[in-house]
Image (tube, rainbow, N blue to C red):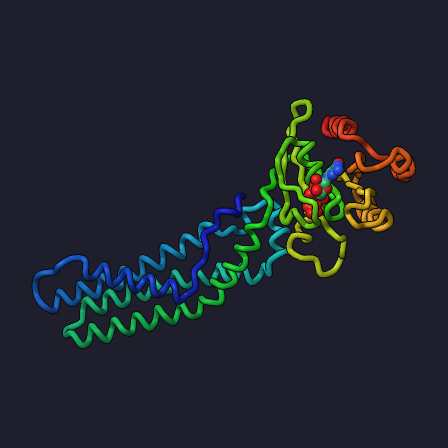
Length: 314
Ligand SMILES: Nc1nc2c(ncn2[C@@H]2O[C@H](COP(=O)(O)OP(=O)(O)OP(=O)(O)O)[C@@H](O)[C@H]2O)c(=O)[nH]1
Ligand SMILES: [Mg+2]
């Protein structure tokens, strides 16, 4: 599922302004002839049709493009539950559906009443009543539109994950995770000499012995259990749910500002449930002595490739 193309959601006021403006334009577009009362009826009918059409079309676009549970893999359902207030999200979509039905019902009722009206005053009165009802529906929907728009901005940061053998690159900020992703997969994700460069999950792909492999570079996490932000939550879910192997990147060059002990603590946390391969980055900045003193078994890029080759065959 590609979450990048979800349409932006306007406020109730913007939608109403648009619907009324289009209605005015449509009702004055054609010069009508015939009996005076019929002309008024046709003008008003055109307006109320146009308002219904504009709004229902907009609502349908929302309902068709915003994902529902049955459209998604369990990973994305969990991701939505983790990063959104999922019951509120579902209620907001249900409310848009309710709004669409109400607008069509009112439209049918008022179209019929206007058609039967006998004088200009009655038609004007009915039109005003219809506009009032539509405005009231839109007012009730405003908070739901607002929540869907907020959800959209969160969903836009979701990674485009495929169901295939997945490796995660993990570690503290600025240790060289994205640089390693680029080396492993030949991708060109952005790297920079400061922490938190990667603000959403980078994906790269590589092929080993005919097996396609997805490599996810998750943003530098500080491994805080509580109060994780949206991206940290995504990172944790990716690691917990998808990773067959984690490549844990250590930086002991002093560039990343985290001590060996801090990096070991995070490694310890994730080691319990995962298969880990340690990669020592920035070796060009280290002396042979420093490398020798590093207390963990670590793998070069070529060795990591070989290990993955073995794992993917299993
Ligand atoms: N000298 C040297 N610098 C490296 C190496 N690997 C990464 N760097 C540098 O370290 C800095 C951080 O690298 P990134 O790959 O952006 O680090 P990251 O872990 O993805 O950082 P965040 O996304 O911010 O968490 C960049 O300036 C890289 O050029 C390396 O092997 N040697
Ligand atoms: Mg990065």
